[in-house]
Length: 237
Ligand SMILES: [Zn+2]
Image 1 (cartoon, helix red, strand yellow):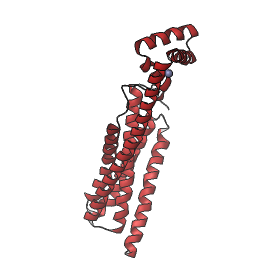
Image 2 (tube, helix red, strand yellow):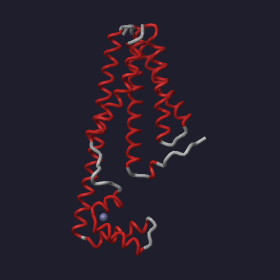
Image 3 (cartoon, rainbow, N blue to C red):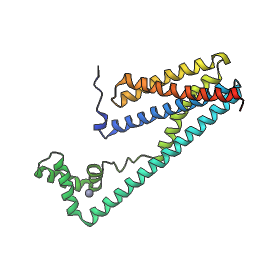
Image 4 (cartoon, rainbow, N blue to C red):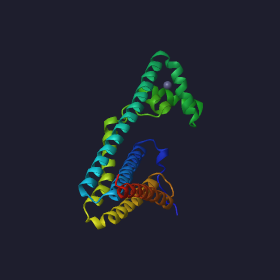
């Protein structure tokens, strides 16, 4: 049943990084759907008041998207700092011990399957053209001109979470009171089927199981918060 999907992990290049972005976007949207659905369904268990639902949903959307953006900013900044530090060290080593660095590059290329002579020749040519780029790519696996921008990553997470969160928010406030819960639950489960499908496809995983797990997680979140909200609403806390 498995179709052939490009082995994206094997290619570190443009395709791999595009798929990583896609995967991050799908996961961000999925987070937005589940956490906001849990929030608004929980509040709907306690009250019929539309403005309370809207307030809770909007606050959840903003809090979640900013939390995601801040987390992404911090994590990508840290990664970028360590990549920059590694490049600086590489630059220093190339300046101070060029012969050892040439030997290192030769060894790394030989490990990848080139014969000693060819590896030596390739290492010399790469060093002559752009030694730092060659070491960055072969030794560190990074492209010095293409370090991830933390602001882009933060903005992308913010958008992805917001898009996901808008679905349960609109589904709970737009329909008439009697339809709120069924519309929200059904549209959330449909969206989770879609995000489960997409993340399974981009990750080369079994599609059916990923969809079921994803829908199960969302259904559980809504059931728990609804039960908690109903309990609080009924006891009048
Ligand atoms: Zn090196």
